[in-house]
Image 1 (tube, chains in turn yellow, orange):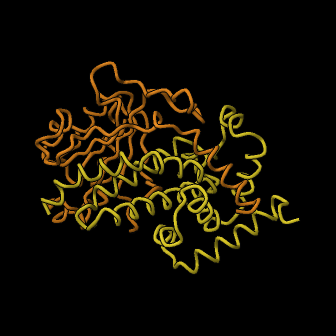
Image 2: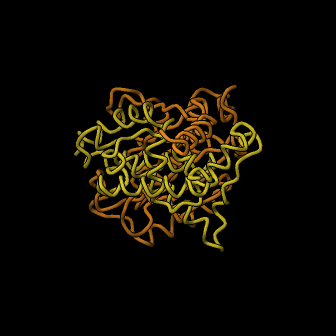
Image 3: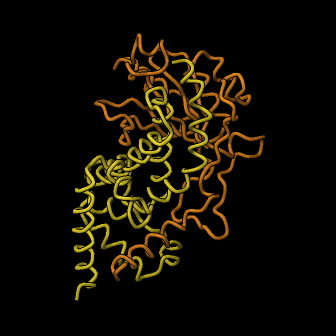
Amino acid sequence: MARARDDAAPAVTDLYRGHALGLTRLAFVMVGDRQTAEDVVQDAFTGLYRRWGHIEDRERALNYVRSAVLNGCRNALRARRRPLRVTHQPAVWSAETAALVGEERREVLAALARLPARQREALVLRYFSGLSEQEIAAAMGVSRGTVKSTTSRALAALGRLLGDDQ
Amino acid sequence: MNSTEARLADALRAAGDTIGPADVADPTLTPGGARRRWKAPVALLSAAAAAAVIAGGTLLGPAGHDARPAAGGSSPTPSATPAAEVRVSIVLCGRKSTVPRCRRSPATENDRKRLLNELQTFAYVRSIDAKADYEIAPKKGSNLIWARVATQDDAQRLARALLGRPGVESVVVYR
């Protein structure tokens, strides 16, 4: 176990260097504000560090941290729905970001935000992170079949919201 | 890729690209692994009889690096964030901890309350969040306490004050 502990720091650091940016972007498009995205990703890596002794290989570690980021985003979004919680304010795209992203894209992101959480996650992991169905299944903790059907339903719903199906 | 897929991919990419490499802290752990090879601030914390990992960049460098890096030219800051704030995660002992001392005596609710009370007495602690909504362990209860302080020095001071206390497994300093 001590060996695992000693291995944890360099291994987690390597993973952090390789994936922190992508995961922060993923969290950002999920939650909509940078501070929360950074917090979610940092907590995910903290969790990975703590559990390194129980995680056998690098691929599993990446899956673990990706799942932790998704869970963190879910929790953050859930917390915002609680009326008496003040810790996390609703996501507000800054004026600068809004200008950079542009109105049409914001419309797409707004429609995406209206989808159920699972559908939104499946779409973001597929079309932003570029993950395979198998990788999405591992990150979301569901079967490949569920990923396929969820993605399909999500796309159809998004198309309807955007008027793309006409 | 149909129209919806293309629009979605484009919108997500545009939003994601507003976070640039300069917006993500660079880890400062020394590659190579053993705790004795960690950089000075970390070694100092480790010497206090607990493992500590510092995963966050600029504040851990030489003096004068206590400001959060500005967003890069092509990656503007998408939302206002407090400047020069250091986030500290206090990881509480759990039964599955890799630290033997923690496995023998996981943090109790009393440990947690005592830590929270103590944190409130530190004038340099700006805010505390014990709810740990971003629970990293898929288990009941909170195993983290967050605190935000103004500077790296404050973070180091806080870590030194807490490491080795009952119920504290490690202290993680970000940025």
